[in-house]
Image (cartoon, rainbow, N blue to C red; front, side):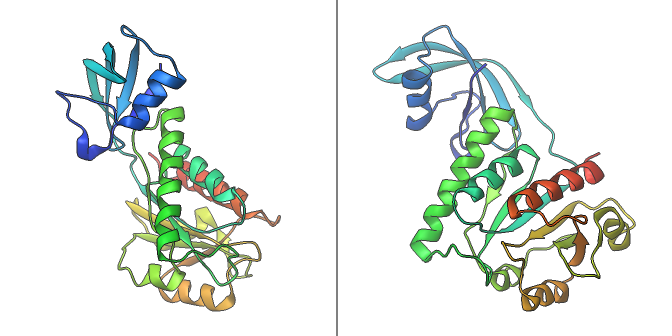
Length: 245
């Protein structure tokens, strides 16, 4: 059944309506007609099965058939990811959505090739948020990760975000396996966990020192050096296995 996203600020369970982009997708791409059914969701757990009652002048009238609510995952995973070159950030956002990340922080580290001025940063954030929406539509995820504006590691650590556990993927000899680092960091089930993943060439020693100074525990991803997009997927997969109850 096709899935469509309705942003939470316009979500009205008693009067569900698609925006222009989702209407275009339903009518012009999927060629849906009156009588067809679909699922709509708001990215904050709510979903509903609807029927297209009528199609009038490029607009669809929806009738709710049933509604439900997906519970959030037991732990919020936040991925702070150094922006890779090319379209690899799109891939990371897509897979992070599929793996249940609650938020994605694009980082402009010292070795990051991609840079963004203020206006460009907002445009990139909006683009990656759309990637997350499309991934959620495809995989049946009703909780949409929040994509933040690209920022430096220093800006991120100064933002005041708080976490129960903070980890950084590291090639340094003091890095521990993720499971061991989690056990060392807390004896209780954490509710919010941060993982930092560096760019090609890894974070600089100064950036690693900054992360450690703010409470990040270095974690190893095994004996093989992974590409940054592979490292992000690996970290979220292992953390999800360990933390999602």
